[in-house]
Image 1 (cartoon, rainbow, N blue to C red):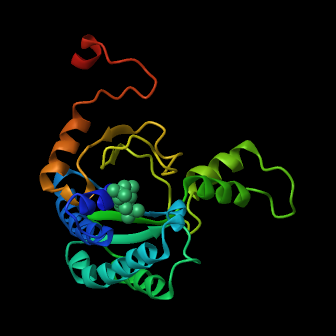
Image 2 (image 1 turned 30 degrees about the vertical axis):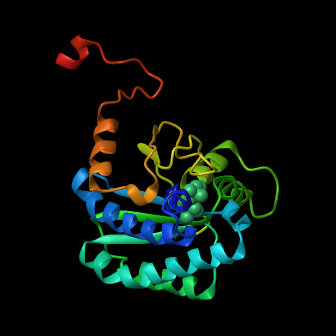
Amino acid sequence: MDGNGRWAEARGLPRTEGHRAGVEAVRRVVRAAPAYGVGTLTLYAFSQDNWQRPPAEVSALMHLLSLGLRREVPELKANGVRLRAIGRRDRLPGALRAALARAEWETRHGTALDLRLALDYSSRDALTRAAALAVPPGGGIPSREALSDALGRVLHPDGIEARPVDLFVRTGGEQRLSDFLLWELAYAELLFLDTPWPGVTEETVRQSVAAFHSRQRRFGGLAPTPAALAA
Ligand code: IPE
Ligand code: MG
């Protein structure tokens, strides 16, 4: 979700207004996603590297996140959305940690959409932690199987399973991954949109999913021949 700040600056508004508008875009996308066949949606809300921003912007973001989470729980629950956070929690403000725990508990039975919020997230950090977990209890070198298993299943410190990503969408015009889901993106289709995040609507979701379906995925294999398709 990139481009909040530039969206605001282009309107002569403070950057935090861009984040506020970004929360509205999150609502639109989360509401629309299941109808377009999206079963799992991971939103990159705050990266480990975002701590480098000015403290006022960081605390405004944390405040918006706690507020947004508290406000949205009833609707998430009513729509069968299960919300969970990935990333580190120990450095988040207490109010946000509490709002997260509450939202995760309240929405735990949701099956319509697996919504994952990446907060204080770094994929390299998640991979390093997963690898460390594979080390046998007495120390020593983990087996290849143990390592691969740990990287694939316990990718997030809280035990949420890693899932191969089908479609990666970055808004805001930059074309980079920024330490997001590096393992999970191995065969993802990548889509970079110029639209800033606050400009995202249900139509953006529709177009992105349509773009995904127009791609031919081969996973390193060959395209099926017409004969194979007919069989
Ligand atoms: C939102 O956009 C991403 C967050 C970290 C919340 P930005 O805040 O990165 O906006 P730009 O890239 O400066 O426009
Ligand atoms: Mg940015």
